[in-house]
Amino acid sequence: MKTKHPVLRRAPRTPRPAPARRGEGTPRAAGGRLVLPAKTAKELMTVNPVSIPAESSIKEAAALLTDRGFGAVPAIDVAGRPGGVISRTDIVRHEREREDHLRRAGATAGRADRTDAEGELLPAAFQVADVDRTTVRDVMTPMVFTVKPETPAPMVALEMVARNVHRLFVTDNDGTLVGVVTTTDIVRKLTFEA
Image 1: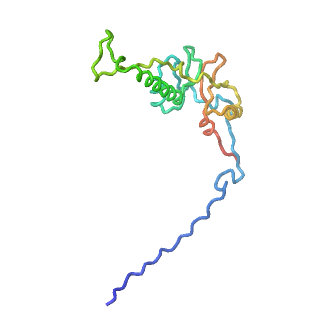
Image 2: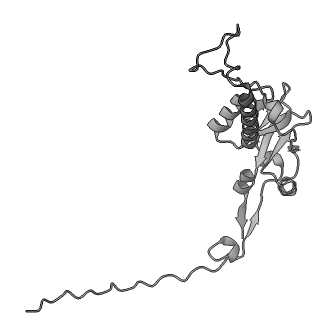
Image 3: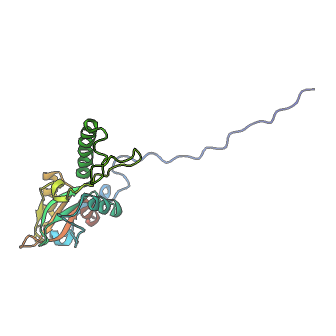
């Protein structure tokens, strides 16, 4: 006796919407345009940006950047004026160069570097720590791109593009850091206008 197999039927297809053409579904396609309503850098900037003293250690800078999730922060002097920018890239580059230097120095020194203050040879289980006393000033990029609070907002955006940077620092007439404008700050301020 033959057994009947159930008949499998396909579910009815629901029509898919046609793929949107480029520009459809955005206010711009409906005749709108992007507008930056902010007039000056002061209206764009984040006030009191996080910074680090230039005399801080590399370890402190690495902790600050990691804990706060920043890619870079300005390095300031005692008067609050930015003298450079310390970035994750600067720290990684320093650590790589330092590690290469220590490895080369250790290869020729053998066990001679494992001695105590009196010159006695330490047991094999001991290691000598090489404390890095490098400061932010030693590693930072000593170039800071700044604008004044009254700089027109479109000029801030054009300056970022011209310099190929993601942030500009805002300084007062004394050169003291008062804010930072990032590409994200500019994008947040953009609005569509019909």
